[in-house]
Structures are given as C-alpha cells and as structure tokens.
Length: 420
Length: 174
Image (cartoon, rainbow over all chains, first blue to last red; front, side):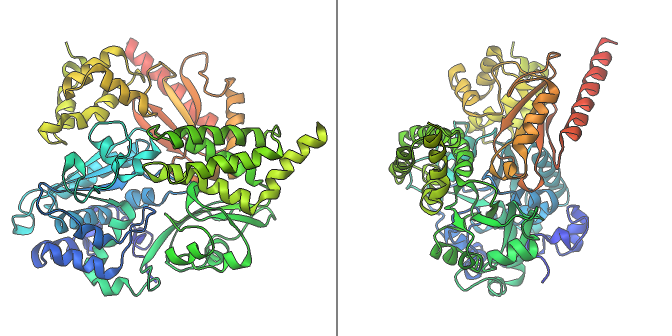
C-alpha cells in the first residue's frame, strides 16, 4: 500500500511546492472550489468516516456540519500544539509534507466558508512555524492562497501563531483563548467552537493529521477512504511508537492493526534482551495495559482498544519493558501533569500536586501501604470534576497502574517496612 | 518612547497584520517573543511597551508572561539548553543524559554556567520521543532541536554555541 499521509516517504522533496504540484498537489482544492458546493465537500468527508486524529476521535464531517451559518465571519484553526508525551506525528507531517496539510486546511476553510485560517503551533515548533510561513508565502505567490482563487470569488488567507509552552493549549477552547491573547485556560462547554469559537465566532478546530487526510478524500471520494481501516474506524492512522522498542518512529497503518504487528513487526520488538511489560496506547494520558497476549492481539481502533480497558486517543504508543516499575512510570506522568495543569479548576490544580507528592514518597521508598490507597483515592476524586480532560487524563495511568500492577507499588512499601 | 515600535516598526506591523484590527490583543504572544529577543528575558518596560501596542495593561501582559513557560522574567544564560526528561525520553536514558550533562558543565539542575552563557534545565515533552535523548536550544535566535544525543555530542554543540557567542562579541567590539 502506498502512503496516504507520509507520502514524502514515497516521493522525495515533496516539501517543495513544484514537486507537490507535479504529484497532483492542489487538484483537490481546485476541484472543491471550482466544482463543488461547500456542503458537498463536508458531505464527502462525512462519507469517508474520518474521525479527529487529535485524540477524541470525533467525526470530522459532522463537526464541520455544526458550523453556525447565522453568525459571521467563520474561522478554521489547525491544532498544531502537539504536546502529549509520546506524540510526534504532526511535526513530521508539517516538516516533510507541509503542503498536503495546508491544502487540507484550505479545503476545510472552503467547506465552512471561512476566509481566514490559523495554524496554532506549540512554541517549541519555532522552526516548523518559520518553515510553514515560507510555504504559505509560496502558495500565495502561486495563486493557491489570496483573493479570487481559481477565478472564483473565494478568498483565503492562512497565518501561523506560536504558543509559548503550555500543554493545555492543545485543548481546543484553551487554544482559542491563547490565540485571543489570553492565558490558555479552557472554557466551559457548551457552547462548542462551531457556534462560539475564535472571537466568539463560529470556528472549526481540527488536528494537523486530520486535515492532512482531507485532500486525498476529496480527490478520490469518501468511499475510497473507507477501503482502509475498520467499519467503525475507517482510514489510516499515524502511530507514534516510542519507549523501549528497537525502531521507534511514526508508522502509517490502517486502523485496526494489532499492537503486536506495530511493536514487533514494524517496531522491531524489545531491545537489550528485555521483555515487554506494559503499553500506553495514548501517551501519558493512557490507561496502562499489561502486555498480555490478549492485549497484543487487540486491533488498534477506537472501539477495540476500549474493550481491553484503555483508549486509542492520538495513538501514541509508549512501550515499557520489564526493567521499569510502574510506580516510576506514573511518577513521570504525574510530574508532567502537575506542571501542565493550568490552575483553573481546583480538583486538577490541587489534585495533581498531591498525587505527585504521594508518588514522590512512593518512588523514594518513603511511603506506607496506606499511601497507595490514598493516591488512588485522590485520583478518583479528581475525575469528572474539571472543565477539560486534563484533570481526567492525569488520573488514568495512576488508577490503572495501581489496579493492574499493584505489586510494583507494594514492593516499594515492603522495602521501607523491612528496613524500618 | 516605545522601544519595540522604535526598534522594529516593520516587525510590529507584520505581527499586527495577522489579526483582525479590533482584536489586537491576539498579538501579545508574538510581541512578547520580539521583546524577549536577544536578552532572553522580559523587563518591566517591555510589559508596558507590549501592552501599549495591543491595548492591555501591564498586569494583563504580565499574566501572560507568567502563564507560558517560554517567557522569562529573570535573566538566565544567553542560551537555554532544555532537555526533555518526560516518560518516553526517560525510557531511553534521558535522566542519565541530563545528569551527565549537568556534571560536565559543572552546574546544578536549572543552573547557569559561570560565564553566564549557558542555562541548563529539564523541560516537558518536546515531541521528539523517538530520537531521545534530545534537547532544544532556546536563544534570541529562536529554537533549535538536537536529537539522538550522547553527553559528548551535547558538549560539542555547547562548544559551538560558546564559539558563536565569542565571535559575535568580537564583531560587536570591532
């Protein structure tokens, strides 16, 4: 199968405008603008079954159809704030196949009748932002952005905007707040961005990978995209594979590929003579899965991963070998979430602090048996009590590690009692 | 006199052009990067200048500086060496790499070298998990990624930064 997203691996220099155009680039955007009504574009994306690749998996075409047509202007914002530990797929797309992403953003803008689109990049993607600025300038020069595109009255401009180091800005309403020049703190939802988004105007926020799928869907039709993946999770997905594997990296595979195929066939298995212990399928926010045969043979699609007790999320598969204790693993994730909690909701702000504190005691061998239950109790009390998913995310690995790898935690307290 | 308007009139104009004229506040983050510039921290006067351009009070601008980690209120090294030690990097030896780097530079976690050139610190995930250990260098010239590192390779990069800084200084004197 040839690539849908990582086409730069098949076509050298695809990041140059002329090479992209020679390989069919901007034909889909031209077709959309000159031959299709905006609703028809949304219709094809609906048929494709494309679901948001940022983690939530919400149907993309459905999201576009929610745009409020009684309130103008409309905006589209590409979420390029990729910050989930274990996720590095959008960066490769923007660095190596930038025009396909920008074309997808342009098509999405046409579909919801937006004339201005922003790419919100995390501050650390400074180089990527400057590269995209150059790509956007090339597109303007070649007549793919600007006024009267393809001889029609449709006009579109795209701008980049750099964040400055805040994981929370990957949450779409926090991202919009940040783009408006505020602290990146989430809004109460509803209203959702398609009715109340940037500057209070109807706005579609889509992940970079989601948008990069769009040109080929418009070119080949929605039905074509459904030939990949499963019935309920159609299409291809980028899997960011990291941790204790021989060949970490991005792998484009149909949804429904098993963990075993990703980790052992593509990723080359576990190095240093170690064996696989656990998998985090959705980065640091994952519920941790013990690497049993049942889990390894589970297809990686949105529904199947849920049946074994986790989520596919952004498909950032972190592999953990048997030399690591899960108490240490969650100590790492808790330091992350404590640092990244935006401070708006008390359960998340205080809860991440206390979970980190108890977890520090555990990894340093200063905890008692009761601390394990205390940690779990704090985690469970955060759930369902914050505006956005970050609070929830911070507890996933904690609760599931204690539940599924309790021995790792008890071993730490036993050492203490024996020495004490 | 507004330093940013005086020193970078075109850049300020380009930044403002990205946003609707009635939403100048959106320009606060790019303006703060511009203000931070080579000196790698934001002064009280910068807060006033940025606020004046985008219609915010000094306090409102400061709340932005305080919220986002890539802006600094205190002076640090000319170059900030930022090592990711989050879970995926740590599974590939980032903690040991970071400790080794601090030792070779003779600084504590978060410290600055005696010559004031290099601050070394741990940061959160940088979306480079498959090429750990890795670091980014933040300076007035932007941000650069360096991946698949050993302590020796990182020291070579730092040596390169030192030489570049010395050359720049000589040029400034001449």
